[in-house]
Image (cartoon, rainbow over all chains, first blue to last red; front, side, top):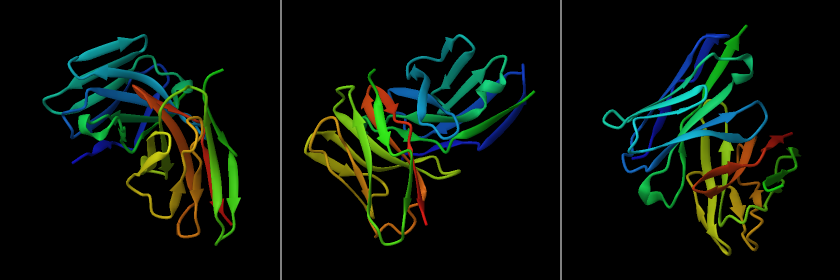
Length: 112
Length: 109
């Protein structure tokens, strides 16, 4: 079955690193995604990783993928108050016609 | 500018009424999706359309209806059969990854 799990809340201090974790169930997903949602807004694609990669770095963002454990993480270096938002991971199972399956979202709170 | 426009941003519905949420895109994407967002539950798929004049039910289609008469437009009607319609509704297109509108917050009064 399809299921994407995330913890609901994470609180960090400004300047620290944040690590948001996600587990998924469908190993057929070619890409795995991280989206950011600011209050009252839609979702913006932050980054994605191809399933045959272990790591992808994009400025302050690092995505780690452990295919064996079906575990995905997003690390935000030097977290800023502007990073406060809800972060969603998503998978796109091969046999689902491109549909994205989203986790519940992790609310990141950055304290000054 | 290319993008997805949802309107209105806020919508109030009386019990027993049908309301229609608009979603328009100028990205020339074939696939369009409607999601419902409730706190702590992530996004749940209501309906999706891979091509004009065709659409499929998602995981929570009961109480909703859609049409796809034009590539650019995918309106969602929340009918009186939907017992708990208060939520944030997100429209998206899909081309490799998903692109989202800014959402419509529907409240039943």
